[in-house]
Length: 351
Image (cartoon, rainbow, N blue to C red):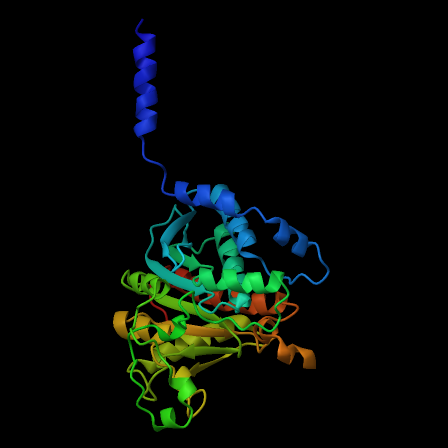
């Protein structure tokens, strides 16, 4: 007679127990990682691009979360304009106390798929061997709505569609709150370079990055394409930052980690004498929260044939992404492991 009440109490306790933190991700990823019939058909074509679709990104991150419990931890950082989840993944060695942190986020612009490839590859490599004492937060796709729209273009053969913004039509890379006011005289000559969102941090995707900045990472890297540079603050001012030598050392560490074909570190506002990038994420994270930040322009474009000039997707994404992916991962790994190795000595790095 006592068995039935005991079973009922146990069932009630199980029902009342909270879901594990990763439960929402597991449910959503299992559902959304299944390719639609259109996506499956596309993947079988000879013209399919060698880049993961969003469903495939979710599938690969799902596998990591299941394979490395306690080492790869998903976190819903927010939702997009259209309500899609923005997932980040914390990666660490659970046997070693966390002493340093690194933020990496990709796909702030819809068409820059190579950035997600690099973030995902870095996530997979770091999950297999996390840098001891360093916790990584990796966001493979920030602009999820824009990425979804660019995938629709690809599946439906709209090769000339140009996608950059989020679902509200806002360039997220101009939606932050530092250096928002154009001052250079060149704004009258080339006004397109000086466009910013009317209201800084108006978009939920930008708010996600701002909220992450408030956590106080030791370094932040925003992955873009194309150009082949490690761009450093300031983007919106010609003036050198007060700790420019340390920022340059960070960019140089990334360059040194790449080897052949390495990208050059440079202050972003000095890329072109008339260029200023107002309201950009690197200025925001560095100026608002003091986080050493780098904007990496992956690849030196994907244009290899005259016809590529008519295809915006190809501007950013090479036909063969393998080497470009390696370069990006090597730069990120250099920073993460510099911090890990420094913890074995006095804990300091050159940057």
